[in-house]
Amino acid sequence: MKNKGQALVEFIIILPVLLLLILGAIDFGNILYKEYTLENDLDYVVELVRQNKMTEVDYYVKQKELTKNIETKSTTTTITLSKKVVVNTPGLNRILGKSYQIKASRVISNE
Image 1: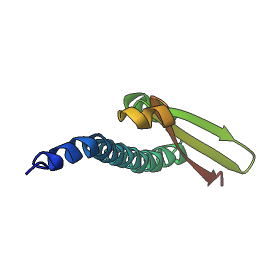
Image 2: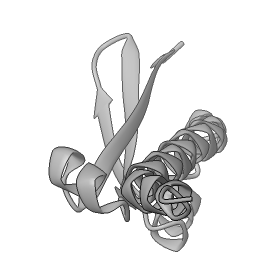
Image 3: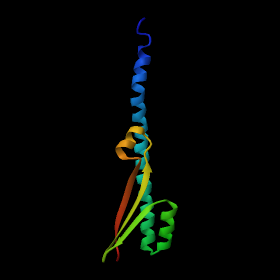
């Protein structure tokens, strides 16, 4: 009966690794969700740009706390939206940085 506390010691050794894996998965899920949301925001902004409603674009971007970049060339317009996502997992924020920048862009025709 000398190994009565063995399971508890193994659990305490494995617990920090398990928590980092779970929190890392949650952070990556959050980043993927924010990228999906950013793509939906980009769809809406593209429709507003096609309708030439630039004041609504500025209001929407400010309301959603996004950064926009619109470049117009002779036949195309490139619209890029970006947003910072905060990374909370202790080990992951050292790898990715405290905030992670996500971007979505679309090229549309001017015709």
